Length: 199
Image (cartoon, rainbow, N blue to C red; front, side):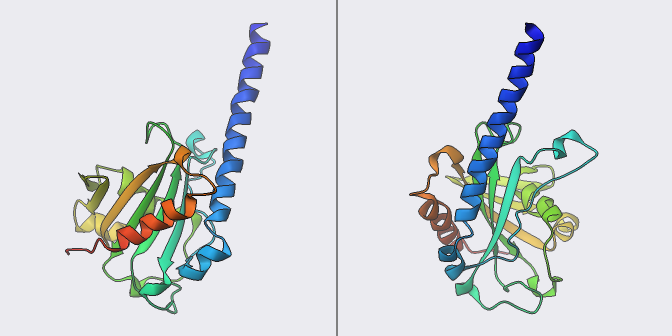
């Protein structure tokens, strides 16, 4: 009996995970709709994620990052980027990162995006994830509901493609629905656009 219950619990747990993935996929599809693409450039339409065959943490995705740039900030260069901030929208369901599932929305400012090579791989997840979560490599300070993250030194900045500063905000994932996702997510991007770098 105990073994049967354990088996059911495992199946139920994975059913919840798969249902959550379906909901996340719907949200990501909405965030890549034609309406969104009229105003925002997507450097890649693939979501960024940590994945590994060697470590069990990489067997299931727990962080999904979509990238955007604003057409209002300029034209796309030959390297496939706009010479302007990159906005990352992360859907995070990792219990070790946040007490409840969150959406993190960050404005990433760089020293010289013109020198970047074309393309962005899903494996580049770390380049956007760490700045909002790794307080060993980044100094993260709160200013009300906004957080500001800067590399601890030039070496770290270089590892993250010349990153100068990230300004970001978090929203409870369960508060997002089909009616408010655009205002909550892209309204936040527009509000972060007004936060300019001092450096």
